[in-house]
Image 1: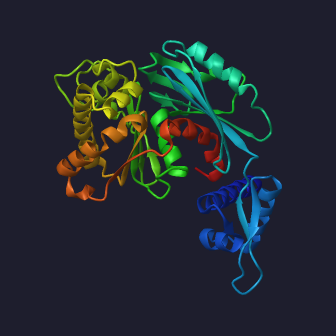
Image 2: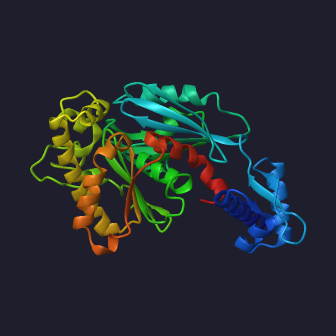
Image 3: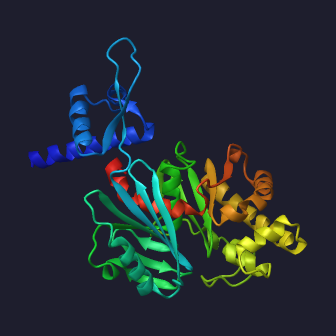
Length: 370
């Protein structure tokens, strides 16, 4: 029992040091000691082990403050890495990300995934087959819908028309995988490597085939009682509106999801909507004006309820959000409570890749004690 306790303490301290190095990017052993309150001897032993095992490296020699010049430590790039997989209705994205947060590769496989779970996971198995080295940490899967991260099961993905899918049955020869809701994956990316690194209370809202949110409260993911928190696409903004996939009427995503916007404009895709809007098409601009109003209605409810510091618009919001953002900001400013005066509403700097990059981070979280 004593041996087990010692091992657990060692692993906890290793994770603590890894997280301190990750957050600071570059840091000396003396500054690690100040932050962690661990002894200099313990830090020296742990960092030596982490260097030997290629998790960290000495990236440079620092400036002297009167004594010996300090060794500056950083996460070692290009060694350990993981794979992110983002499943959507019209294709699958893959992203390789190393432990230092560097993106090695992003690629997209176009395919119809609706009602095609077997086909989608067949493609995923083929892609993951080449990732089996000692430095491969595993792969994370992001999917829009309700997931059970403990049993690694997709409970319900309405836009994919998937329900009750045990991923282990489809990837039966791999145990090194994790699963997460697509919007929460985006929020994980924004928290670790994106524009919310110094923000504990924020919400990521993604739009494509639907609209979902990843919520961080006090620096932690908020999932709700049954893991389905964040279904902001089903906030009703028009009681007499269109029927939604969920069975209700007038949900936000019946108006503001990108494929719905394209349909209302009579155009084949959101890219065409952006092109027409930028050329001054009155019909398209009228549709977008209505979309921004309904986004504003939903965001005011969210802001007044959760009081976040930031709201990040992602996925295909990154394509058309610039056409809505001024109207959304004006609406939210006018109708939200004064407690939201410091709120920022921003468009993700990761474009439409935040969720796949977040999925790639899932196997890395344990290393940093998250």
